[in-house]
Length: 377
Image 1 (cartoon, rainbow, N blue to C red):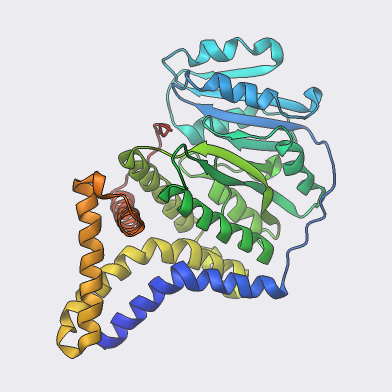
Image 2: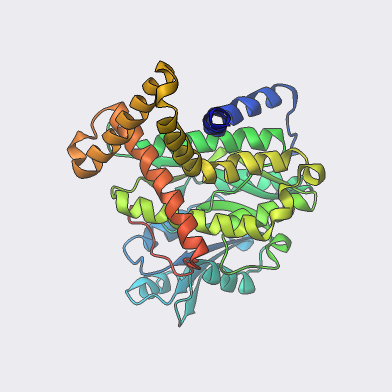
């Protein structure tokens, strides 16, 4: 029994990070999701929630105004979530260019601000984007052309991390891995989530709303449950800088996972593959199993100790685990040691899975992270 628990846990970790990726590759060799994209110009409302982002909001507004899209078809709404700095004053300077400022007197969180923006949005298509994200001038036209297909409900961009350092950051590598999964999922049928930093949705799918939950997860999930498509367009990229603070990244991951667990708990019926087919397998593999990996790791470590006397393979495996985690611990206390692939991978892997454990604790203790502090990038 102990042997089975040990090896099944190893298999589940391997499957979550590598097996699922391989499964998607194999499926997309035989199945491709066909989207009837055409150049269309629907009315679009861009909603940008902000909180005390006076230093970067002007660049964001200029980026949106620079989109190659007809002015009479484009609406830009800045939903200021009780900002107390100069954010509102900066936004006000662009009112003559049609930028709408929605001043919310009381700070109630990002998702609430987005919902308030939705109430005044006039566009047929709604684009949700964050303040720290930039995109190319032709990206909006490219994004909305997917809506020529009447079965498409949501379209996501691809996250691209920009770093000033030589070579990709560990965060950037992880994002690329996750984006690869979403691209393959989209080809196979539907993506399990949108990029919260830049994605578009038909307005009718934005209701009903849940202000405590991440709409970049529950909107596409709900759309797929209704028989529509949620896809990723690999030709549309949203650029943002990697956070230089591991503490900020830890908080962001924790907040994101808590929101994700809440969404999956509310819509748990979608995990039934007999009703929702392969999409259920995707959600179980990409979301649920990944959020269970730290428990599998604890089981592997514990059972491995109990199996040390059963052969050299168990001793070797335990030694490898111990070394891996000790490297991560050393990097935490001595950041200068984070200068090679092994230390970077071990530290990022350990930090990510620790954030998942903390997220489960926060979720069951009732913490929902309704208010948010934008990640400093």
